[in-house]
Length: 489
Image (tube, rainbow, N blue to C red; front, side, top):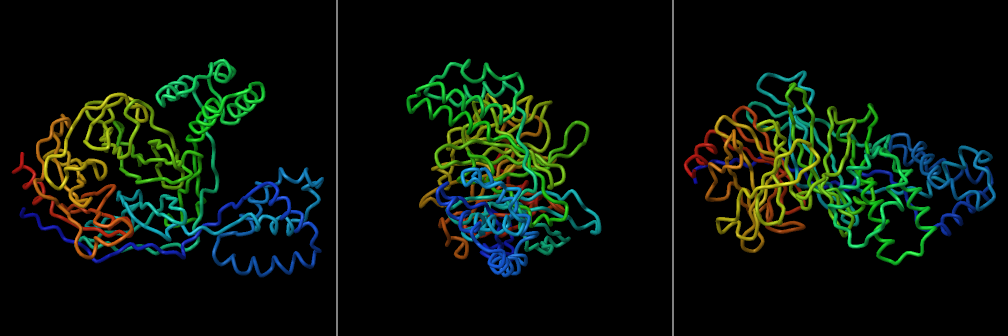
């Protein structure tokens, strides 16, 4: 193959110094003992402990006292057991109590990988040959919990990425808002998830209005649990209902945060073991309005749930689960516009082949058509997409991955018909990118992987992960790549 792919020297490596301040809780008994210990301290002792604490950690976190106060409020419900009125506790003592329920979490201490790249909403103060971009990453820390983080930079006319300064005070969302649920769609998703136990709907859903809140559902479930002697499998079903409900929420970050300081950390119960492989895409609707979408996989340690993020400004994010029969596996990637009046999505229903689906609703997907099966030796184990298709005059360009001998992951490329993307009109016979000697060592050896590329000045910019540990990027001429793809048609 004559394609000249150019690897770049820039490396995105894990940085254990990048930490967020998270809520820490063990058990009620231990929490009560901790609270009592602080309440028994004199005012002088409180000041003596709090002063160096604020001095040390105010350099690492924006408004650390506000974080301590927030975490105090998360355990304030325990105070009645101590016969203590929260209103009688001084602010200094409150935030000292809150500090004992706070921990630092290094979000990317283990890995910084699986990047996707999109055009930044702000293209001011750059030249015509430059493009400001946002790169998303999967950051993984202690316990292998994954979150979504961002970097920004400007790609110049020679395809060099000049990174913008990275903020050093990371934050989770300032506000988290739960979703208002539609009973009909919520019931439909429960059916799709094929629960084995059966609970009559009148016990819960029939007691709710057509539109209800997370709190209303939780109250109904708590009342149902009290009134019934449930077998273990039915208790499990109640938990699954709450698991689904917790998957809808909105995040809002402070306007004084740099995008590199915003961390989308698992919020809902179904994400407690991580947020995996966000595939961001700049989507343009029929009115030429832009929304940035990302499909990703929520994981709770047992089950996975495909979800969609949408944002217009990267300050406010809305998170929804993906409904429908095909929403059962990883690797969904949205097309950047509607095709023939419908949303279009690449997916991998069986973990083995590539599929394509169409829908009138962006988070409801019922049917998919087989698009590609493993064909070449470097992809005999499985194939999948590496991000959203890219529209070109020649067709939809799809960067793919294949898994071959020794579980080696390589990147390939395919070309789909522009008007009918169910038709594959080109497919590379050899890998576009194979792990080299510098890339094959890491947490998972012999893997290169990407979650989304983009075109700049007629070159394809491909950010990719190296062995599930660190990331870099490469470039390739679109003319060369498309010429090779058309040869293979």
